[in-house]
Image (cartoon, rainbow over all chains, first blue to last red; front, top):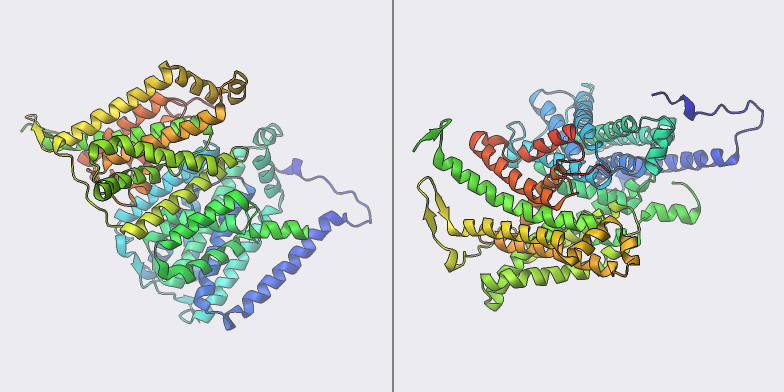
Length: 330
Length: 295
């Protein structure tokens, strides 16, 4: 399948491309610079551990949003890729003594491999069934992790060493690790941004809007769906690997279905199908969990209530509403 | 005892019985899910929570009001079914014109709220619910010991499933339901109150889940997580069976319970994952599900 049909040859005139195409790129550029600037100085004002948690989950949510917001595929089992990424990264760092430059890509590779198998199965059905299949397959991963020896069952993999980046930079200091996590997060975010605005992303959106029509135009919809599924699960695996290094811990919580629900919630709150929505959503949910942690099971109740409220009243999400008011595509 | 493939017959039948019990609950729950999905086009993620709620309401009736098992069997489906009707009218009915995933997300949120509230109130450890005295004890069948209550659960589940199937296939109300599943607009044009039918169907499906909860209460302890664990397996059952047919949902529920029981005997490590593996195989071989119609 080539994407040649997609790209119309631009007219060879001296006049610049129309404003409509130039404008979004300009404001996206400014927003990316602003976001980077804020995140660069943030550890001087906010506890770095909290910020790293936020970035890990924000990247996870961005990966999920690539699949839901642009591919129109609601995976209810993304915890499997995140959690297995965390486990494999943790295991490689602790038992094989590999550095983070190898363990985190290994986590991403784990997510991608799992995503390839599960995605190939799940895209055989559509809509609601797709969600149920991804959830069921993720539950299988959960039971596997519960029984497998290398995950240490209920204890999880504890005391994962953060190691030295390229054997040089000691990551045991939170601030140093923060900038590494930030670099990886920005790389992931820019990668996703690039994918969304590539010809591949355009075809993906076409399939989301009208699959039979996209097929009739000659696109192999199944292959596009599988590709975006694998990309999304790979990034989710990398986010999980990062999380394992930050907390020095990989547990069953990471592969449990509640984690899959949380990432859906983050994306929904922030605004699905927006570039920055999942980041805002992750910030809202992580902050809320931080402040409500002492309330125990009330966190579940509050999350459920946010779900209900978002679905009924606030389907665009925070960034979606802001984008509509400013008439910007965010 | 005659050993069969080195497995004592007693253990084999014991696990088969356990599998049949699990299958009874899978069948009742996937039946409710299939009926709701047929007419409302939403996957009721709250189904597991409503099954759990059924067990809790039975426990509350007994401990706060002194109402025993047999009355609970009648009252609990009505109470929980009524709560389902309220949820459908107030919340779910607002989403019919939107993408189906919103129905899934809404019912997931409601499930989280129910589970969280009950865990706050009663903790996560679970509370016992005694087997009614009429069904205590059991029968010696020679090759195995059959507890009366477990036999009752299987009989009750099979009769409720068959009754529901007859209701849908052989009565006028069932004909309305099938007509509305096939084409709601045309059914309404014939003067049938489809919105009312939708609401009642949701209430009925939820009632079935609550009934399963009451049946389950004496076997598994009553605890807030009992629904979340079972619902994901039931989703897999529904994917395997396909939701096109009521009978398919019932048959695949019992069959998968039995297969799970057999796996516990021959390869216990895989007993928790076998249903998901079967789901994967079915998706490869027959993507629409064993009894499903291709969309």
